[in-house]
Every structure is written in structure tokens, then in C-alpha cells.
Length: 81
Image 1: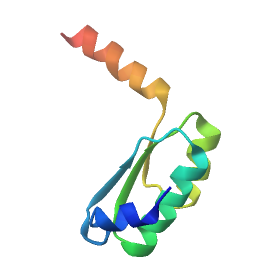
Image 2: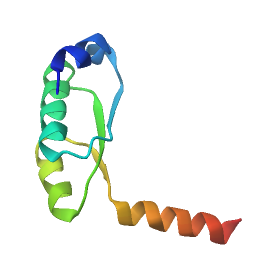
Image 3: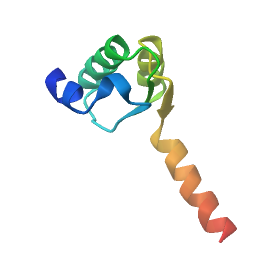
């Protein structure tokens, strides 16, 4: 995780940060940097399970997406079509 990359991405003025990295520690580091540089930023991250979701939300991730919810969305999409 390179915080300089986040700065170059204009993190201080960004409205959203979407984290798709699998590594939990990297997600936590990115979230902490994001909240320091831009306290108003909305952070969205994928979580492997409910435990990781809770950990991420405790450090400031606003929204988490669980694989189960993605599967449900796909199933619902197929039903509606």
C-alpha cells in the first residue's frame, strides 16, 4: 500500500473511495489514510465475511459489500429479466 498513490489520486477532494483489494490490512491502511486526508470521503470496500465487515466499519468504512450480497443481486437480476 503506497499512500503516495492515494494522494496522487486527489484523495483530498474525492467523494468516494472504492476498495477492491483482497488483503484486509491493506483495506484498513487505505481507509485510515483516506479518512485523514479527507474526513468526508465515503469509503466502500468488499469484505470476505461478517467479521471483516465489522472490523472495516469500526475503522471508518461506510459501506461494505459481502460476496453473498453480490450473489443475491445476480440471482435477483436473473429473476427480474
